[in-house]
Length: 141
Image (tube, rainbow, N blue to C red; front, side):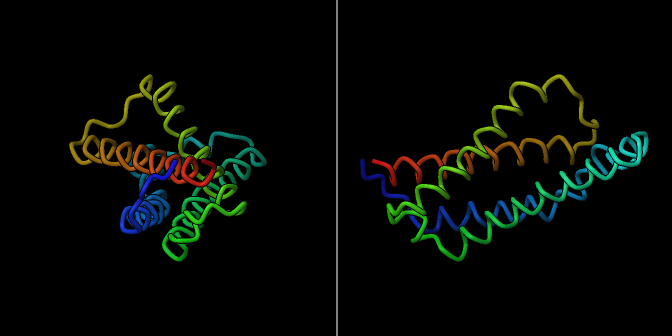
C-alpha cells in the first residue's frame, strides 16, 4: 500500500506534539488543578505522579522533535521507521481510546477557553493518531 503523506502534514503533527508538551503544565495547573490533587497523596506517590507527568511531557516533545527533524525518514519503510511510527501510533491511538472510554465521565471547568481548548486538544490527538497510523501502515505494507 502506498499512501502519500505530505511532509507538511507530518511536520504539522510534530509541531502539534511539541505544542502539547509545552501547554501540558498549564493544563495540569489551571484546568485540572492537578497540583492540589497531587498534594493529597503520600510523598512517594506525589513523586511518582510528577515523574509520570514529566514522562508524558518528554515523550510528546521528543516525538514532535523527531518528526520535525526527520519527516522523510519516518516514511522510508525501514525497520526503524516501522518501529518508531508503530510506537508513536500506538501511543496516540491509546490516548484517543482512553479519552473516549474514560474522560467523558469527568467534567472540565466550564470556562469557554477550556471548552474550546478541549476540542482543540482532542482534534490534535486524533490528528496524531491518524498521521502516525498512516505512516506505520505505509511503512509496513
